[in-house]
Image (cartoon, rainbow, N blue to C red; front, top):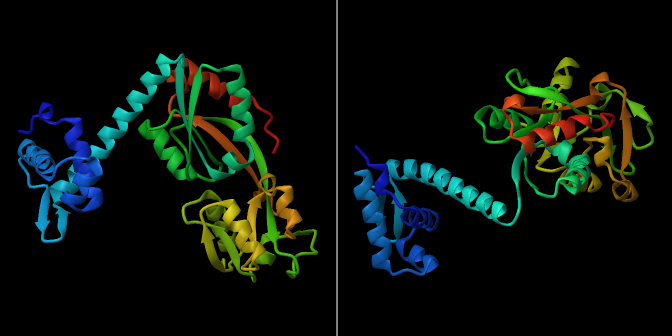
Length: 302
């Protein structure tokens, strides 16, 4: 049986460097260690796990299946250690609480910067870690305890989450200047499906909403380009590569000044709800509960 006390953090960090570089020599250079010291660290890990972790080749090394397994665990262990060190440093300089929050792109682009600025102005001893994720990933992380709070769209199921209303927003169509729809004041989504779309990547709640609406209209959604961000979508639309759908508050004045046009959608589903949730609101730390109450209490109108 493997004894967990036989692992040390430095050896795990060395192993990660070897896995990343694919070479003992390059790992030694990056770690400012001798090649023999790197080899000894790997040999110690192989002895502790009773498994071969690397396959040596003339021009480098390759992870064995056991090596891949150790890599996954080592990443998690070192991430937790880094989090621990960061939080202890926070306490040392006066921070009294750390709140993790994952949010979808719409919440981060439209609302969270201002809301967090207001909260932290009144709670200077609280540290907030914010990560941008897809709504489905947010809900999964809440269930797994990887985040304290999460903000997600209303069309992604969250049956095991304590959720409250965060904000409402409205989706608009964004088209380039000179497009056939540029002079239209409002339009139904079904009437736009003859045109190419620029959209967010697969897995986003916004793309899921568009695909569901296209399916209901019994028309295909013509995805020409998919991007990771709203800014990327705007740039592609500005280049004339398609039309797109964004939350109205994400269409900043400089975007319209560049010649793009925002067209109102008449569909009822274009008005969305963003939820803020926790795995168990009663089990939150005082700081997380305070932020939960604050964000759930801001004006809900988009």
